[in-house]
Length: 106
Image (tube, helix red, strand yellow):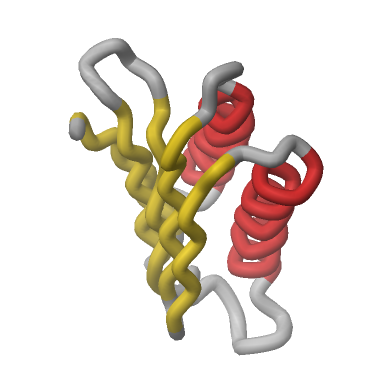
């Protein structure tokens, strides 16, 4: 199962996310759920850091990625992370046995 945790502060600003696990929807190389999540996560990280210059820490490990916004005066990172949250939330409604999306107050 994929677990996506989205971190936000008391003002409801998204500070980052952590996505871990495997969807287990199909065999490796044929798992459309895993591919959808992986692609969306990579797009979010690359768009934030490379296209918009958001100062963020990106930590990639086997089965896990952590994206933490260090500073973002225009809240661009927050908006991009909200887009990912929304995308994964809708995927979790379609595939409830394969994805869990959580909000965590930091």
